[in-house]
Image (cartoon, rainbow, N blue to C red; front, side, top):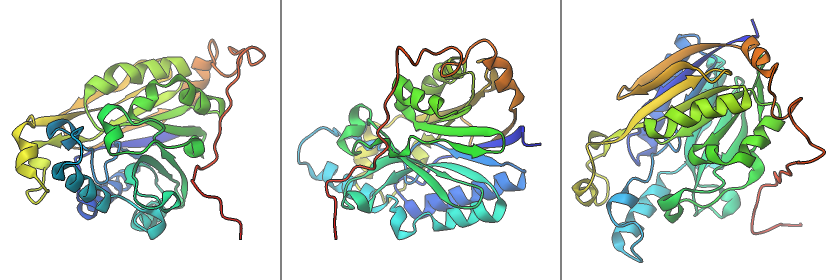
Length: 316
């Protein structure tokens, strides 16, 4: 039975920039998945408390404006500080229901001073223990105006039954070397999280599956105008240029042969399921294994720095 894994994709919208209400939606999804016998549930990038859509809608690159500073401060106030116990209730649910979770958060870590924020992907195991926190290595385009760049500490894989799971945030999935870092550690179930939309997931999900001969789960959030709370700072200015649909979903699963198991799901909020068979990984690795029999480590190798970065080192 260890060769079979039931997975859940939580394609949900945040209660935008509201940490507590979005945490409640995450809890509901975990309970839903557990009641449907899922063993792993995946959420989209930065779901708690949501993606910084205002940057593209309100002139996010304008210098020293009250709009940008106020929205950024509101975002930071609603981000997740793991050291303060913000994910304790999620961990307790994972332990209670014996379900592992990949959760996209905006992290406000104390080990970097507690004021800058990171797009982080957290893995919580079936015992409710946080096993890794991967801070996005390179924020994309306007994301750099609000997210700080991360480090390699979270480039880790985890055992889950016969599977070895790892994950990356959004456009990190286009970066060959972070992918190779996970492949080299034995990854055969790759988790790719996105803020939303099939234009991100429809091509790369199958590409990574074919390159790695692994299962690939891409999970996106949803976001529509109706998901902007009315008490958001500068909400009228945000909505002036906002399209009705900012993120249409696109969550999907590809098998180790690169073919669809679940095609991109559009415009539907919910928790979606599939059961994966580990033996298919072994079948596809027969003719190609990028870090095994089809590699040349005597010619090319990758060095990974997994030290958690900080501006200070304290020696008491």
